[in-house]
Each structure stands twice: as C-alpha cells, then as structure tokens.
Amino acid sequence: DAGVIQSPRHEVTEMGQEVTLRCKPISGHNSLFWYRQTMMRGLELLIYFNNNVPIDDSGMPEDRFSAKMPNASFSTLKIQPSEPRDSAVYFCASSRMGQTYNEQFFGPGTRLTVL
Amino acid sequence: AQTVTQSQPEMSVQEAETVTLSCTYDTSESDYYLFWYKQPPSRQMILVIRQEAYKQQNATENRFSVNFQKAAKSFSLKISDSQLGDAAMYFCAYRSASGDDKIIFGKGTRLHILP
Image (cartoon, rainbow over all chains, first blue to last red; front, side, top):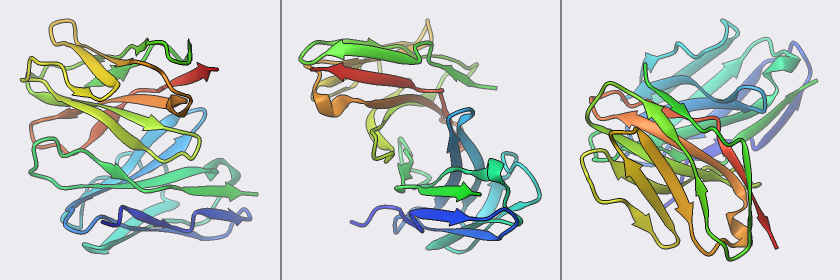
C-alpha cells in the first residue's frame, strides 16, 4: 500500500515566487489535512478537506495561502507570493472518516526554503 | 476548546532503560481518542499507539504502552528497553469522537537515547 505522497520533497525559491505543494492521499481516505511545522510554532493545522470540500481553513495564515482538492486523489497548497517566513516543513495527512480511530497518516513532508 | 500539553520539551534516557513521557489534555467531552506520534530525524510522522477514551484498558504496542488516567486527563507514554532508534520527537494528540476530524497536537517532547 502506498502511503501519502508529497511532492516535491524539497523546494528552494526566492521571495515573491509562487510555490505549489502537491499531495496524493491514501486511496480510500476521504479526509485530507495540510500542516505546517516550524521550530517556533510547532505543528499547525492549516486546512482540512472532507470529501474534497474544505471544512476548516481557519489555520491558513494569510490570503497568500490557498488550497484546493479537485478530486479525491489530489490536493495542492499554493503560496503566492512566498516570503522568507513561510520557510517550514509542510505535511499532508489523510484519514478515513467513519472508522473507529480515524487516525491520520502523514506524508514525508515538503521542506520549503524561501530566500 | 481542547488543548494538549506536553510539559517536557526534552528528555534523555539510557539505552535499555525505561522512560515515561507526560501528556495532559483538557476537554469537556466524554468520548475521544488519544494518540502518540513519533517523528524521527527523517521527519516522517509515525503513529506509535492509540487509545479510545471509553476503553479502560491501557493500550500496548510491543515496547510502548500508555497510562491513561481519564479523570486526571492524563495520557503518558512509557517506552521500555529504550533503543537508539527510539530517539525522536514524540507528539501527544487528541481527537474528538463527535464528528470533527481535526487532531490537536501537543508541542512535542524530544527524546534522546544515551548509548
């Protein structure tokens, strides 16, 4: 079974550029989560989807951040324009709502560096 | 709102010894799920163990076990026979059983294993 797939694994970009992070959830999972992890703020939930519909985007820091889930097997997190303070590791996780524990399975993360 | 607190930012344990990581949480709900996730240097988030609030028996997974004290809202993780591969950041997490898919994470405890 393939786990959650994220791409790219590493991204280095310059301030002001657009950045797009991609995620493929585990097949059959119907909830998808985007997290950001930094030393200062720890693990923060940015947004989550259920059945491709955004349920809670209260963690999205600014309008520069946007996320989409056009179908059950793909999601993107876009930052436009990027800033140095967006440098972090971004995780995507998926789960199957309706199961007892509904634990989240995480992807390997994308390390983003904005110069 | 629910919160998860890990009061030990860092801990160290001698290889082969036993260590306990603390976690407390705050909630007004009676049914929920608790998790411990491990994040090794590879940064992959790995589910270690899980517990349902209605189950009185403490969960156990090989060398990992929990001490779940519902009245005290405490959920500590015990690692027996510590191994070098246990060195990681450990996150305690909470999820409501009442439909919300969100998982609330603590700030984490970094565990060092001393050879």
